[in-house]
Image 1 (cartoon, rainbow, N blue to C red):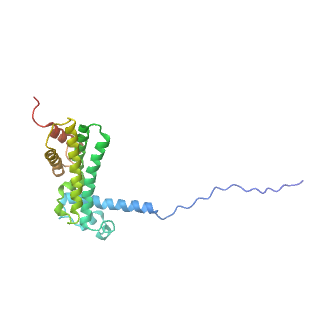
Image 2 (cartoon, one colour):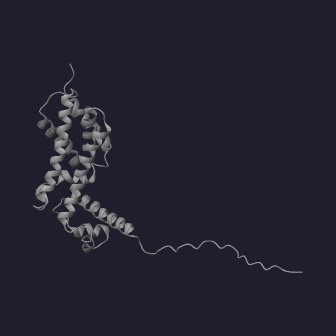
Image 3 (cartoon, rainbow, N blue to C red):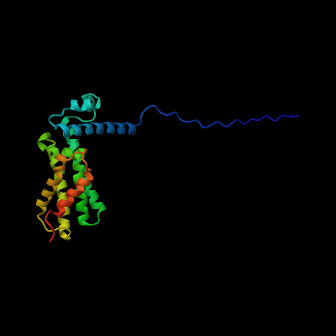
Amino acid sequence: MRFVAWSGMMERPAATEPASPFRTARQREEDRLAKREAVLRAAVRMFNERGVHATSLDDVAASLGISKRTIYHYLASKDQVLLECVTIGLQQLLQAAEAAREEESTTKGRLVRFLRRYAEINMDDFGRCVIRTGEESLAPESRPRFRALKREIDDALRRMLSEAIADGAIAPVDVKMAAFALAGALNWPARWHSPDGGRSAEELAASLVDILLGGLLPRV
């Protein structure tokens, strides 16, 4: 009897590459941004609670359990930390204006939506910091950016008011004075609103805007 030799081999599972113990460039960048954001979040809360001048980077570092030197890996100075905090708040307001324009079809709808978000943002950490920070708290070289962003927000509000007046959605008023009055009223919750209060920021914002746009006098 003849035996035929079998030359085949059992299939083996394909080899897999071992997971690298090293973080990728993308992971390192995400980690850096998360740590930078943690520094800004801790700083903005201290600025709001204690005031800018009474808060040091040593205080911020201690609250995070790190050294002040570690903060310098992400932000160069206290002034840069403050500028970043107010910039975030101001950019949130600009984004709110853009969202209102993109997502609301009527001039009154855009105005109401923007004003409500304006008030809500000013009751949150970064918006609150914008309202509580005078430009004198920033270094002279940082003030032009602060002023420019605030001017963009004022321009956005004035455009919405002008458009609502033009199509009869609101009464004809002095646009400049109306913008000042609305912004002034909606900035103040940044000073008196407490997150632990009985009403949410969203509820308060809606009530404030209803009063401001509806007025207080009885209808005749």
